[in-house]
Length: 111
Length: 110
Image (cartoon, rainbow over all chains, first blue to last red):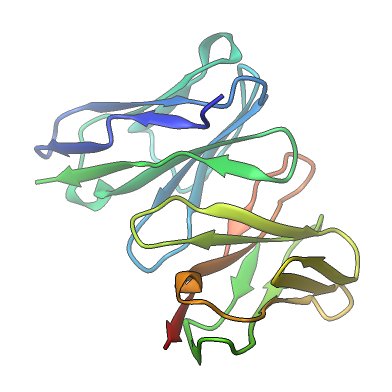
């Protein structure tokens, strides 16, 4: 396995548009996380899946954000009606236990 | 809620030893992790301390004192490639939701 992959690596969108990101975790990992990171900050937790079940979602996550992990494999993160404040790096990570393996991230720019 | 405090920046010279501290406040505690992130790269896992004491992995060591809600990452024989951001992180409750600190930027000078 080559690790966690994310697609696309970069996304530029206009305010108000919807965007969807994909994450492919390490195949045997049952846990999958989404984070958002802005410059000079640590990764900020967004949501977490164990297999296909979404177990936790940050209270900071507005209703414009939704995530899925069908069949407990890849995951998608959708942001509806994007705002300029959504501009950030979106990171996906997978794990079996405490050690998390991060993907390269999707950099979102909202103009 | 959970919060972690770490210095924003640390500078050192090649070959030196540097310590990056982390204090935390959590509603539950399952251990302290450390991650490294180079500019433009993804965070990579360095270490995890579930119990008090020192864990050593090559040039890097990590320490935890649960009674003091404190830990540190110790980097020895610093190399230029160690210039990066270092994050401490704590898992949440039984659902393993980590909270990351804001990160410490380590700058290694020749």
